Structure formats: C-alpha cells, structure tokens
Image 1 (cartoon, rainbow, N blue to C red):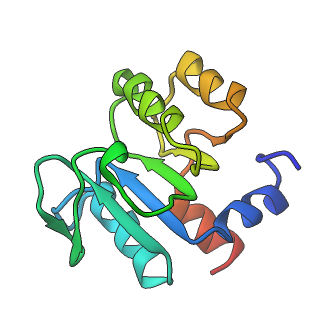
Image 2 (image 1 turned 90 degrees about the horizontal axis):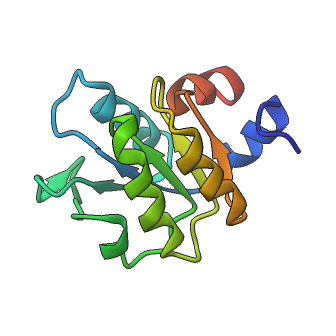
Length: 136
C-alpha cells in the first residue's frame, strides 16, 4: 500500500513505538510539541537527544543505537544534512519499520537507502498533522 495513501498512513500511525531523533526539551518547538502530542495520544515515545537526560518524563538516549527497546518508527527532527547519519543508525537496527521525516527534512539519497533496506519512508510530513487528519 502506498505511503502517500490515507490507508498507508493510517497503518503506519497504528504502530506504537516512535523514537524521535532530535526531540527537544523546549515547549513551543515542533520537535517538542509533536512528540508530546504523540505521547498524549498513547504512543510510546523514545526521545533521542544527546544533550538531554530526560524529555517528556522519559529517558533521552544519545543515539538510536543506544535504545534497548524495539522501535517501530523513527521520526526525524534534524536538518536534512544530518539525515544520512540517522539512516546509518537505522540500518544498524533490524526492528525499525518506518523512517518518517518531518516538514522540510529531505535527503533523497539517504531516504532511498532506507527504502532499499526494506523500510517504509514517509518524508516531509508531520506526524501530528497526519494523526489529527486521519485518526483525530
């Protein structure tokens, strides 16, 4: 099912564990407010931020490779030029099913590598916006 379809997005939004790379401690920033929204709507949010000990009352990890729990979706709030390194970390894990980049975060080469490894890719979309539209 194409990810561009509402049904494909609903299926992805039905997954439970979301690691947020670039999760912010600062309310008012999308990298804080989107994960908080997802947390408030029952998702298991795993903050990934090497400059924080805790975000949203949860332990923050330095990198995806440090997360012990299984991850369904990696949601990315880092600049496009850092996406290649995020995909490198995704490729080290067998559990990640989806790489989701927020608005404005695009690196075609990096995302093609994620697709080629069998991961689903959602790019340049907001999880909160799609959740509200499709499930809210």
